[in-house]
Length: 125
Image (tube, rainbow, N blue to C red; front, top):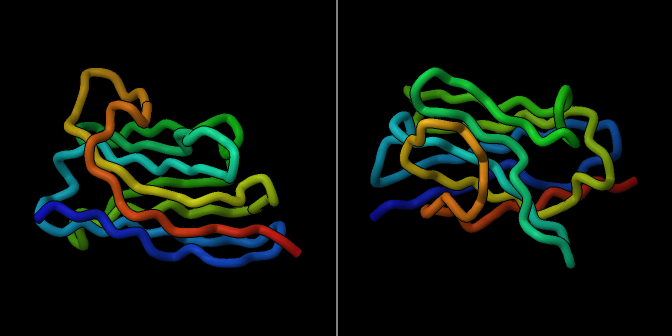
């Protein structure tokens, strides 16, 4: 059974850091494009960051560039999202997702077929 499980969410003060992990079971992540998406109440799901399976190229939403870093650990079959300098507007449920590789890394949620259950990130003082 293919499954993605997120962990690492929680409550953090503005300016703080969190490290989200996406672990896979039933398949190996290194073949797939992996994305992190988030959805805040009343808002559409948005692509935060994605990482390709071929050359390790990455995508970051403008709102998180310079603050978030996505990386793979193929030995552990995980993808992590290091989030620094967190802001209240980063508050959302964060999901990881997987899709087969494409010619172009686009980080569009509609193209991802396998999803985790999500982990809550709350940035508040």
